[in-house]
Length: 428
Image (cartoon, rainbow, N blue to C red; front, side, top):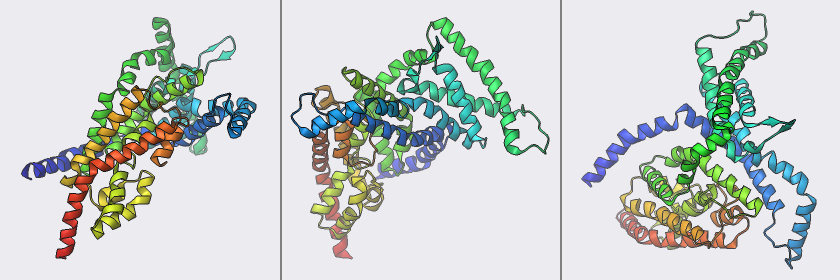
C-alpha cells in the first residue's frame, strides 16, 4: 500500500497539474472545440453514405432492399452533393473552426481570423487550372494542412497585433469597419509569406502543398493504425482515468485528426469498391475498445445491476445503467468508485486492452469489416458498430461479444468489492 500511496501522490501532485495544463493549452483547446463543431456535418455526410450505398446486393430478393437501391439511384446526384459539401469538406471547415477557437483563446476577433484562414486554405489546397478548381483536398486528405494553416494564420495575426502593426482609424469610424480594415495587414502578410512558401514547395517537389504534407506524414498516419499505438494509448488513457484524470480529453483530441483521415480513406476506398486500408477509426475506439465510455464499464454496470448483493453497488448500477448505455461512465467512475480503487485497477486496464487486441485481429482476419461511417460516440455500442461498419451484423455481434468478455474480466473483482461493501453495510 505504501507503493500505491506514493504513486497516487506522484500522479496527483505531478502528473495531474501537467495534464490539466496540457488540456488547457490554447492549440489543444482549439483542436478539441474545432472538431466538436464539425461533428454535425460529419454525421450528416455519413448518413448520406448510408442512403447512397445500401447494405444490399443488386440481386437481393428483399423488397425493402430493392426499394432502397432504387431510391439511392434516383437520388444519387442530390445526395452526393450533400455528401461532398458536408463530410467531404471537412478540411475546409476544420481550418475555419480551429482558427476561430484559437483566435478566441487569444482574445482576437475570431470571425475575421477564421475567414482569413479559409482564404489561405483555398490558396494552398484548391489548385486552379484551365478554369477548373480541384477540391480533392477539401476532404480528409487535407486535414493536416488545414490544421497547419489555421495555426499559422492565427499566430501570424497575433504577432501583427502584438506589435501594433495595424491601420489607425479615426474614433468616429464604426468598430466593425475598423476591425475589417485591421484585417488588411494580416491578409497581406499571409499573401507575402504563405503563398510564396506554397509556390516554392510546388517548384521544388513538383507537387502541391497537401500532397507533400500527405507524403511526409504517411509514416505517422500508418503508425496511428498500428496495434502498438492503440495499446499504448489505451493503457495511458485508462491509467489517467484511474487517478481521476480524463486522459481521453487530451490524447483522443490529438489522435482525432489521424482517426478522421483513416475514416476518410476507408470511405473513399468503400466508394471505389476497393479494400479498406485502415482498421482503427473513431468507431473502432468508441464501439469496440471503450464501449460504455471508458474501460468497458458497461459490463461492470450490468454485473452491478444483475448480481450485486450490496445495496450500494446495486443502486449505483441502476443509476449508472442508462448513462453508460450512451457512453457516459462518470456515475460509475466516481460513484462506485473506480477512481483510486485498487480493486478495479487491473480490470480497468485489462478489459480495454483485451478489446483492442481481439477487435484488431478480428479486422485483420476479415471476420468484421472496417468502419466507414462516423456515428455519434453516444450511440449504444452494438448499434453504433452496426451503423459505422455500413450495416455489418458481424460488427454488432463482435461488440456484444466484447461486452460479455469484459464482464468475465470484471466478475472476480466485482465479487470481491461487492463482498467488502456487504460487510460494511452489515457493520453499519
